[in-house]
Image (cartoon, rainbow, N blue to C red; front, side, top):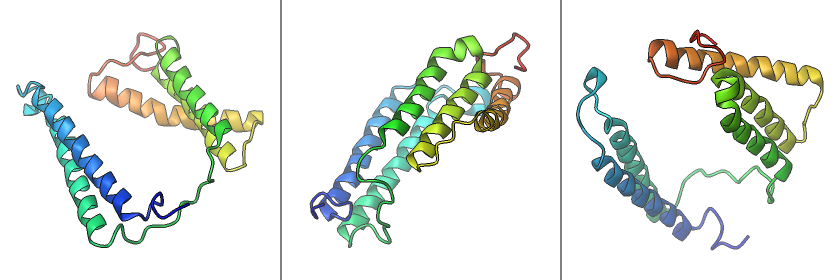
Length: 172
């Protein structure tokens, strides 16, 4: 890899910082078109877009400053392969696409658990540890449900946000 394309390249690091600043300004421009009328709890719908815009702007400015004053510090070399791991990408992509396709049929909890199970297959595959045994599928399914269920219940029961469920009870 040449120095011009290396992640240690000062021009590339500066470009990343400038890109973040441009992204932040674009988000702020979008946030300015969102109504500021206060909603629940006195916070309007434009609050979080502004928070995100400001946070990204701060990160972008800091990246530019670091790049111009010696480059990003204490940067580790990348640990991944030089080429993409397409089998892992396919597993993760299948999980995301099936989640989007099945969320209204299976409900939030089961579709997110399926996404988790397939994503685990993809990440393990990229590490050379793909486990296709039934036991691994069951274990990862339980973990996926254990992660998705509290999220579902928090959104539906505590925040009163409608997410697709498997039943009409609001608990599954």
